[in-house]
Length: 399
Image 1: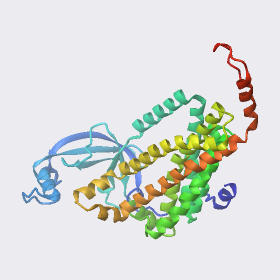
Image 2: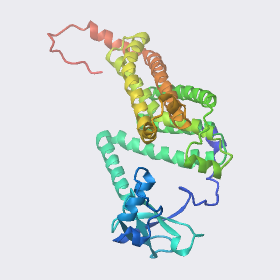
Image 3: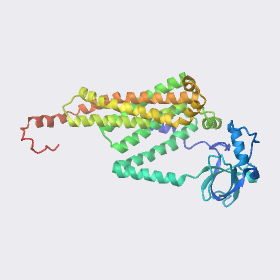
Image 4: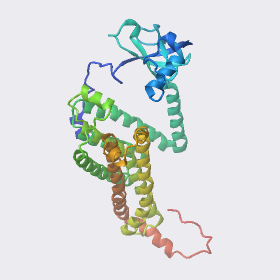
């Protein structure tokens, strides 16, 4: 892992000329200072002449704009070289995002446009609610987890640092996304597991189980992403990335996403299985590795059922608008599954699930072998069994 970090370390993302498209735009902070209602006809907001036909989305929108009441919002730029500058924007009645007076917004700046069209509202400023929610999350983790919770937050911060300082810049520099993902995921895993759970044989078993499962996911992902001819270039964002950095292997980027996305759930499964086997050994130190494995795998089967269901529902929830669009189009299941947008999510889900399923027997076997080698733990159990009973009220032997 250290050798990989040293060889692949990017030294920063390569610069590029801003395209002004999507997220690749200059943005500034702004606020809405005034909102007045005006007739859409007076504001000239009607783009398509109304024909009275409301059976289509365009016709319905045109009728609403013709007969409805629009809003004229005055926005003040609060950052950048044009701080204090104001401009107006018309908000149509059928627009999903309505502006309110006093609201903080994000505006895009296009220097090549005419002066009165250089700024436009692109989004709402959500920094305060998101920061508050992050604070509540951190507080809950620390209150419940105590020192472990603090270590978990530190590990989370380090994971984001590895992602932003190594993985993303290295991919943008043209390094192989698969190698970058494997090295970066290994660094995140080692730091997170040892920081949160301590340097011990138990943690090392979880690390080994996670590494073996990640290797399996990488092999399966490389095979099936290539076989299914998934390009990884399925939306505007990936298209923009490919346009800005043509040397990036987009299918490799997809595989890197599968590996990194599976890592978080793998950590949970391997740590839980290792802890279960260790606790079984503590409860019955005389149990051999076969007995530990059989007992641990019974726990693992329940874990598999819940985790796989969680993973599938998580991906389905993320792709819900896309699935809804296919449902509206009344496409068949085969047609939907064969489209690259959905096929990409199916392959991602199935490969991750196979890795999760495989991690249970692998980690359980490793944990049983390692913990059963701790032979000194057998002696106290034998002595306890040989000790005379005291009517059920004897003192509990301290271990």
